[in-house]
Image (cartoon, rainbow, N blue to C red; front, side, top):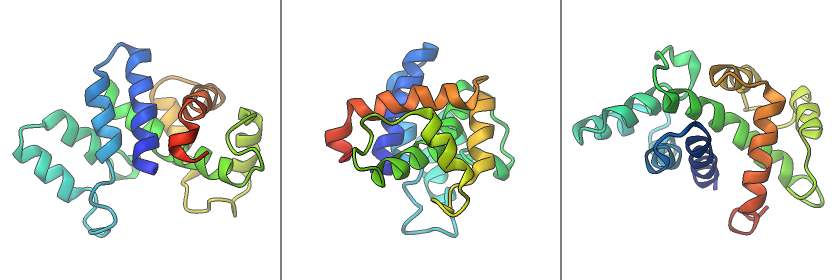
Length: 159
């Protein structure tokens, strides 16, 4: 569900920025493709396969979808995958613990949850902020962008 939700958000970001929706969607869908099987080598396995296929833009975006890996973010796709990944996962987790799930969720409630370090503790709060910064948005603005996108796919995402 994480990969699919990031795909959906990436497609919406592509539409917003006038970018290639299909390419952004694939980036979101496969950004963690090797994580479960090869967590110690993530994302190198996926990046290598994409480079072998000549998909250098996708490979580069996936190689840098976490800022601490210090890969320069050159394209809008490079920036958007950082903006979409951690925050989408966090919003999804926050929705799961609500009685109404994603319905009625607000940026205010997400921001409040972000301050609770024990909630979804594996989500890097610094990365969430950097993602918004990379695309030139305030964090609240990015949250307000993502929530209705997830709401529109609530049945499929089981939200």
